[in-house]
Length: 296
Image 1 (tube, one colour):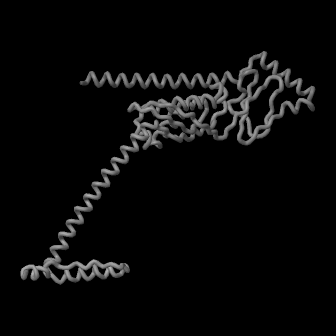
Image 2: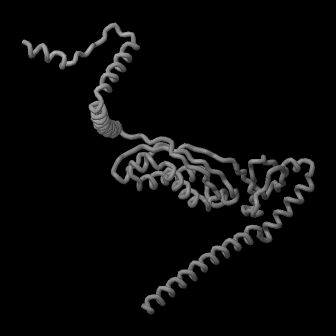
Image 3: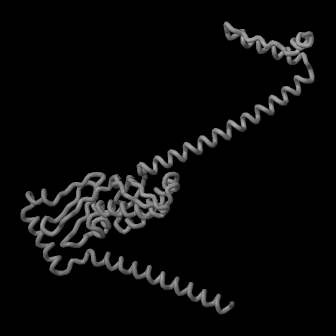
């Protein structure tokens, strides 16, 4: 037992060391990228100096080529000789670029929504359904969205389609119809984790519609109708049973006092007369006819 626990402890410490080494390697890579992003080299700095001299010589004209404007909801990622000049995007407002060596890309930071096309999905209980949804996302890191992925919007759309199929393929039909909020949250977490290196934040995912085949709809409707009829019969039987018990208790009470039956009879006649009926049924007790039957 002691050897087993010691071996487990050694494995845990080794895994921790490996994870810390991986984290340190990634941090070193990021630092190297940050350092190399601004280094242009001798030839690069020479071109920058030449472009500055060109701007100084043709100052009144080139000022319109150097000044750029981005809106409040936009940011600009500047590339100088193919390298990102600063690890922070420019904007909003005015910023300056060199006309010969700089190039910039505008990035929209507003929330973007798109519809996921209807996807034919096979659920875990082998039912084919068509599901569509909507995704809301925004870019929170413009540099990552430009440098780490070729087309952030298109990549997010394609990833949302595959994630919808993967998540719903592990659910039953009942879970798909009843637990839409849980499915939306799981899809949002999966998309957010996958698009984080692209500088994209997935804010919300919603399941819009679930389309079932016509045969399955008829079968589910028949099942629901049968279950409702069964519940209605059970409720009616319980009502009859309760009514019979109440009538039995009432008959026992009336049997103790014969005058109670006469009062109940008069109340019934009063209720019939209040409804303005032209016909009143007058019940004749059979006890009154027994004397005539004996005489005959």
